[in-house]
Length: 341
Image (cartoon, rainbow, N blue to C red; front, top):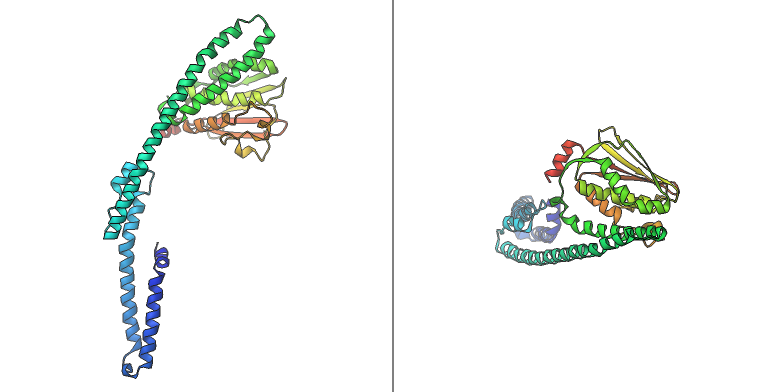
């Protein structure tokens, strides 16, 4: 900060140096001051200026440091207003008052935006639940069809609508996930069997099978949100798998005693250039642009939910050979940190 203060007060320094040069020039040329020691005069002037400069540095930066301390950590606007320095000089007090007024205006606007956001979320949730009613009726009508071929095709389209609604529902609830999860022992095998059953019609249409192994393991997580993560990964695996292929699912313990759930498909794969971006919101990539079924939201939502639950998602892929997504579940001591957030 001292270097910054020197740059800010360079006009003072230039003025003082110019004044000293002029003073030395006058004292040297004027014979009336012949007996005066230039060294003594310069020493007194420089010493006085340095003392004054340091005093002003302390006085002027004291307020700036107080401002930095009040904003040093992520805090609420109310806390910032309470800890905001009032200033020491008349100018600083006027500046503090102006900043307080600006913060209050920003707080009012932010509260207004929060209310609008909550209202939009409520409307979206209400709309989703309203749509689910006719969607359930459609499923019952599809199940009652005698034409098996038409039934299977309609089931796949119904499933796509159901998945899109499910994505939107969880996207709306994502901002309040910390209020909506219960950490408990979750049976991975049970979740996988339940989610695979939901995709049955789609898998039959593409003739995709599942190779399951070593799934009899429990992890500490939230059952509903974990099922959502698995659903998004399985949806992508089925969508981009070739027909007549298999999806391999395994669990194992890594070197750090974490449980790893691995889901590997034998599909299109992801290019190395696109791999770092697959968790970005609305990113569909080159393959996703070739189909209207891709929204670019599934893995984005899965990644965000996983971070809230302390689950680390990693991915590896080769074009033409498929992709592997791995979920690394937190240990019990790491779960404590999650609950303490």
